Amino acid sequence: MSEVLRQDVAPNVHIPEVFNVATIMVDRHLAEGRGGKVAIYYEDQEITYADVLAFVNRTGNALRDLGVQIEDRVLLLLLDCPEFVYSFFGAIKIGAVPIPTNTLLKPADYEYMLNDSRAVVAIVSEALLPQIQAIPRERLRYLRHLLVVGNAPSGTLSFTDLLERASPELEPEPTHKDDAAFWLYSSGTTGFPKGCVHLHHDMVYCAEYYAKGILGIHEYDRTYSVAKLFFAYGLGNALYFPFYVGASTILFPGPPTPANVYWVIERYRPTLFFSVPTNYAMLLAQEGNYDLSSIRLAVSAGEALPPAIYQRFLERFGIRILDGIGSTEVLHIFISNRPDDVRPGSSGKVVPGYEVKIVDEEGRPVPVGEIGDLWVKGDSTCAFYWNKHEKTKETIQGHWIRTGDKYWQDSDGYYWYAGRSDDMLKVGGMWVSPVEVENCLMEHEKVLEAAVIGRPDQDGLIKPHAYIVLRPGYEPSEALAEELKEFVRGRIAAYKRPRWIEFVDQLPKTATGKTQRFKLRELASKRSGERT
Ligand code: 3UK
Image 1 (cartoon, rainbow, N blue to C red):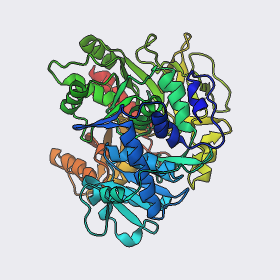
Image 2: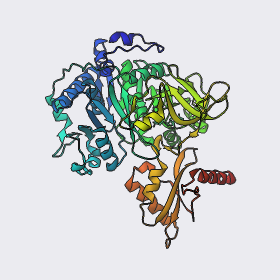
Image 3: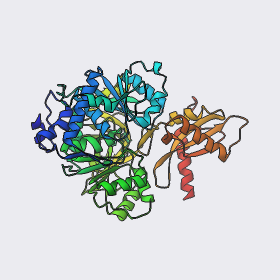
Image 4: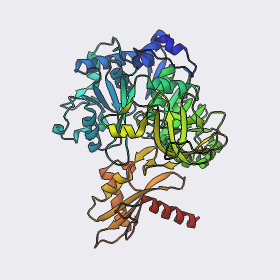
């Protein structure tokens, strides 16, 4: 397997048929003399590649002892911590399929993912356990064991205890390069999230083409990703990119407040820094003198980076943020700015290893300068959506996948984001479905109808704005607006709550009674135009 890795230049990634990606990301470093090198910085610990290998092996053995078999799913609900790494690669090494999940969701979301995936084991951080315990156990048809990282109450198993009893020696399952390696859930406008099934070769592809090809990642880098490991973005940034080249990752389990982020940067001195536009704006809003001199490259993704944030960051810290677009389906970034070639406001140029096209409704390429639908081709794309055959066929067509994004290309070859073709919003880099927020608002006894659109805040970043028609007999007020925001926050993930509530007498509708969100968007942008 190691000849795969010695050809370290991007264009030809050759992966053998029998291939277990955990061996490339973990085992290989011992053979290459990196056993004593720090793989993970976490709190006061410096965890070496030799330590990681032993813990990954123990985790794989512990899962096998619990009856986990090849292709079985293992759901991860974990803060960024070393146990995430052990669970992820430990599961993969025995041919099982880990599913990292968003830690900010609600019990109903986890209930869906546990049943849809039929995960037999869930590995959960102690702090997040209440979200799982709130699900009535009889509703979980497939879950057999709940492993807790931290204090394990009765009815659950202690992750640490299981590891202590397990052997640190483990032969990898001889999986195929096209076996499922892990899943990631991605949400859409309506319906439940879709499990994107990623294969053993996918991570290698992104690490070669984007991390090495664009960022030039090498073994002396230290990564720090504000985007957590459960995002496709964070998973590459802070796990399989550094592990692919034997670099070090900094894991921080807490929330990414500006104070925390500056503290992590100054204490651990990352060379590669990854974040999302909302967080860059928050960092800029925080006054003070911070030492960011360790950072050789800063990356932004998840939503478009407004040029003003790029400029302010450059002026204050002397760092050019590299914006790039990726997706859960493609796994990581496929169009990106380059360290020596940035066009602020654009997503940059295509990453070698990928092809993109911008097409009209009939699938014909549109002329340069015109907006169309962005399609992408590359071998890191997920194989399919689990148990969603129709959605798979709508999204993946042969070698090509539709991103759902509108884009245009300028005459110099740079790609520019021009909005979504659905009504989905990216808020702080995370998906928000207007339909989900509207449905939640309409559960409130005083709400007759609701419509949600994206509205730019003072930094040009999109946040949810709700239009509300009240039931007869109720009057609009500031207090009611606040009550509705809190109502949403208590029921669905907090980042989905509307930041503005506007009471109206009626909503614009089509002849068939469908709310016309585009009319509300037009109204909102006309009004903000009048204000400036
Ligand atoms: C939007 C962007 C403009 C776009 C992701 C880096 O965001 C990631 O994955 P998701 O599945 O969302 C994908 C969608 O998000 N988007 C992402 N980046 C940009 N729009 N400019 C950008 N730079 O709508 C895209 O289709 O959550 C990002 C790496 C891996 C990822 N999964």
